[in-house]
Length: 257
Image (cartoon, rainbow, N blue to C red; front, side, top):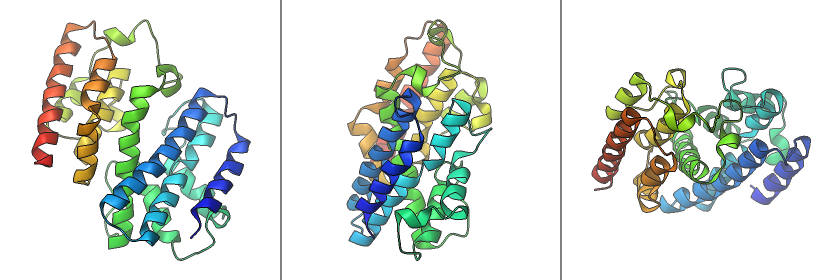
């Protein structure tokens, strides 16, 4: 297994896309950061070298379907092209995978991990090694989504729906708020406003699989950072976000302890 070969192949693949596009560059950085976080988690779990390298390659490829999605639709919208499933198609039906990794024996693990990385729940009936790598990439992806929401521009994250004039006045949808307070992840179809999307990211804590991941969120103060990034002018929204802050911190403390 040769991660450096996979990385060079990925860099060649990116030549098909406009890397000056803010949304494209956001996803390139996200990819490399997810690689780092996958390595961090895999090391924390004391996995062997083979599985650490495999986790890094899965991370490198997990969002490969995003680039065509952005190129074609100018937004991150899985209703038009489901990026995980499209990524699996590009890699395996078009056989691009062999350019990234020569060995075939890891194909099923890579395919399952990429396919499941963004699903509401991991599919059933996976074997132990498939399930392990699904959990690692899901946690790594979510951890870096916190960094993205801390650092990147709203217009790059939400290129078609961001409005600087209205974001501070938006409401949280009732269903989104209730699900969060019940420690549930937010389903895509229930997100109506950018605030809903924001709450959806914070709710990722309820689907983190490893204590090392929850501890990472706590140490980096991501709950406060994300909640405080938006200046809430809507009193109802402000109160609900305070409730969400308290709920999230109590959940993390309970799980970490």
